[in-house]
Image (tube, rainbow, N blue to C red):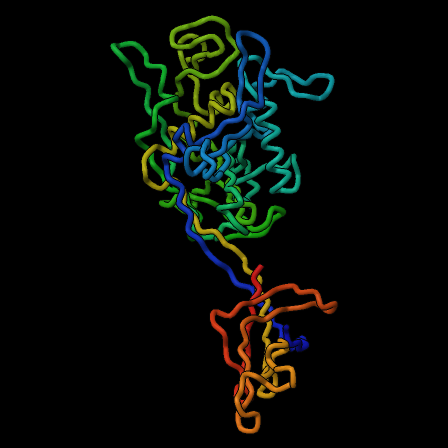
Length: 404
């Protein structure tokens, strides 16, 4: 049976600390098909078998079919509704106010809506536009085509620690090649081998916005070359596709599209971008971002631009905030020397743990501390690693720490 003592406000202290954890995301996890999961949530009608795509893809730390796999990041892209890219390819607005686009463009409304969703969450207004640097209103720094990377809560924890983020990314795609003198329509699906660049927030300041603390991300060799924003509290990275990719580079390859029948390397439901069959001068931006589905764009970014191998593709430290309540349970010299357990005394009321009550001091062993509320409801129990002797020559204080 326990012995009770009231704890006063002077016996309770609160504190807050932070735990940092280093997170490394390797290239193979991002580029691998077994560690990157797609979601078939978008399906078109029309010519051929149509186009099926995800709105985002999730990267896991191992084969995502395993029960032990953990979600690490989400990858997706978006386009600002007021950008020149949208204005140049839109064919008008329907009676419901929806933008209209030709069949050569895929998922434009979805890409716009994704951009608006992030703007609402991070900027507080769906019609707002991201910029790099974040606080710069210059037109040249506005982000029209954005790459969004969401770090999952398991790895971002309470926030990403500022000044610790770094990402390796290939700004240049594979240069067009030829096979036996004929064009090779596949630089879109080949892993980049040049233009490797490190993007980091190291040495850059932060500020507070609607989405919490935010900092700029720049190339490691030139801190003035801002390429995006990192929202630390949300664990979201927003990159300007024009700045992190050589957007004006020629793109060629097979992508999903509304077309029946086969043509060269393209089957029904596919088209060739950057070929003499349609758009020989196609660029990664805006042509690829307009004509390709979100899955095609994310597949290219993940499998080609992050490269493949066991090297680190992205690294940062996270922050776990630990709120602690310290309860000091004090036992003075004349307290807790007797046990309330009925076996502590015999039927005559004599203390059984001592031989001579006139010369021996009574004692007890403390094994646990229980914390009760005002209604005597047990809230928490702290166990000792070993029983601790308590007698009238000892003044003990037990510190109970509650972390949450």
